[in-house]
Amino acid sequence: MAGEVFSAAEVEKFGYCPLSWWLSRKLAPEEGDELAAGTVRHEAVAEDLKGIESNESKAREAEVGVMYFALAATLVATVGLTFLGQQFRVPEFVSAIALIWLLAAVFLLYRADRLAPAAERLLAERVILVTSMTAVVIAIAAVTFRGVESGDLALGFQALALIWLIGACVFLYRSLRSLEVAIATRARHGVAGDLAYVDSATENPKLFVSERYGLVGRPDYVLAQGDVHIPVEVKTGRVPRGPLFSHILQVAAYCLLMEEAYGRAPPHGILRYEGTTHEIEYNEDVKRLLIVKLAEMRAALLKGEAHRNHNRPGKCIGCSRRSACPERLA
Image (cartoon, rainbow, N blue to C red; front, side, top):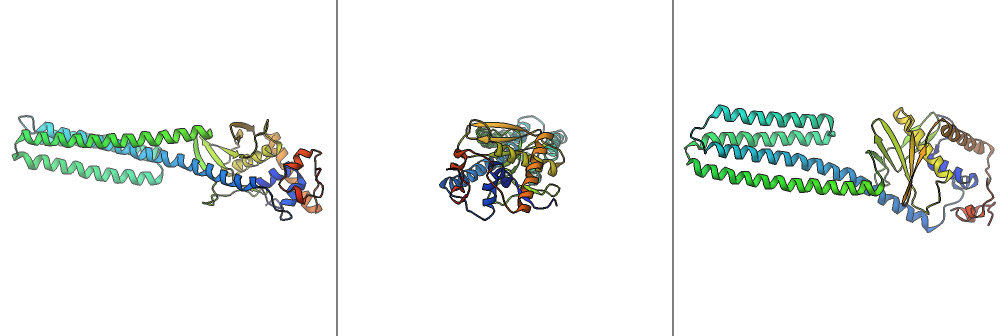
């Protein structure tokens, strides 16, 4: 471990003002109603983002339901049609059923292996079991009821097929509705790619750690684009004309944590203000700057003091520890 461990949030404070960071180390509490409001807004964003995964999962489950209800309707209709013929050929009929379910099994195996998480694989296995049993029951019924008047039996099976098709339509509506909500949420938060991580105070998610650099942090969320992981930091306060230096440092810290955690540096991180988004480039120069700031923070601890590094009254006015600062400008 590289000496004292700092969080990405501490790096942001140091980038804003070293003295403000120093006071944040249990010397002066933060002040202002904006802090509590910001916490509430961050948690609301987290809940919104988690809804993307939930709705997309529901859409996938409903998609499976559509397929199986449609297959069931096909099977039932096939059974009904056999009773309209002059001769009931059991081998050909059973072979048709076997082929249909073989194709369905191949499709599900593909989804489970390439697309589905572990929980959905279990669901797929259960659906295969239930619908396979249904097919067996239908096949047995087709043989058992040969003595019943074929025309009436055919009509009964066609009615049953219609019911299964209605069920397929219900699942299709659920799938499309869940996808609509997920797509709208993605657009609202500019989410492109898979959500690999969402920070939430209620769930205490994973803490990213770099032992090499003595850095820890939890980005607001992480986007997985192939094998690249892009950290995203959401700022809920006032919207500046451009990305602030302290915020850039914080995003760089998250990029370094992604590099350490996944073995590949992201090309950029994302900084989101209300209504605007910035891609913060992450390269060797930015990484070196971050490492220098971490060294300056450790040097301040060894020295036992830190001081204001700016002459901007507006920056002091916006500081949440202004009232306790001995070097404030206004």
